[in-house]
Image (cartoon, rainbow, N blue to C red; front, side, top):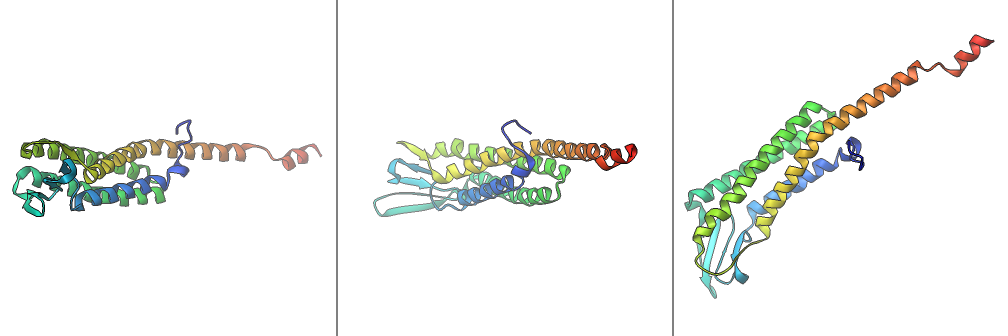
Length: 196
């Protein structure tokens, strides 16, 4: 496929493994108890995808972000993205086992849809969360980073699934051509029989 050595036999199980990592990253981002946004050193305000906590010292007040429509949209988009990613993983394993080119293109399309959905969710969150910031510096932290990590892995796998069918077809064409060349070559015993 590429001169650098990316070929179907090498990618056959690496790409589904990358999708499995993307699923794990998505689950971490969705299920994290804290870690999407926090103020400097998390002293007065921190939040995850579902709740936020404000307070000082030991007095923390918890509030659900699900009261806001933007947070509901982010949660829905991330969960839909995760479900589609799991379906794409199953399709990826099936397409790699059966070497089904149509299924590979279907997987690539589904992964592209997941990328768009998750990018929308990961952009909606900071844009709307910034309205809730009173003062100070805030940082998007590890769980939010896992969400972006899952999205980037999914984008890479989508591109690979677009390229792999070409490698598969080229490999099959070369194998068929080699078989035809081998079948058309006269054997040594046939040549000797004609001259004896």
